[in-house]
Length: 96
Image (cartoon, rainbow, N blue to C red; front, side, top):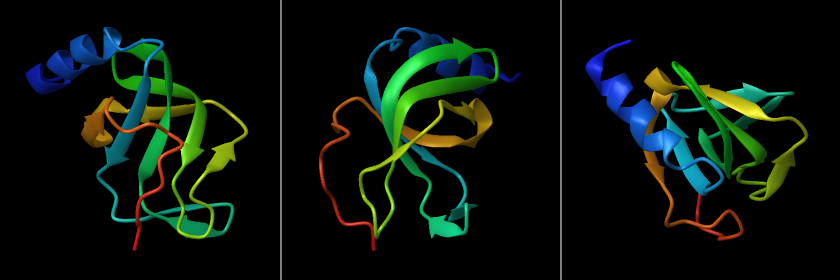
């Protein structure tokens, strides 16, 4: 794990229990046949060396902007390009 990931791990560790919006590197993802942008919102439930886990997690999809994923979602730290505690999960914003 590089220095950047160690710094990110430390910052995210302090956000346990907080609501977080996370954007990952992929331009789009595919889950159960749905293609969507890599934007997730949820409560940080776990932070480990290498990944964070959000639960519950909302996947921001164009046709379902408040889709609640039925399982906790772990995101590798190296895939995170941006995150914010300033955007609530129930906030609507354009995804196109």
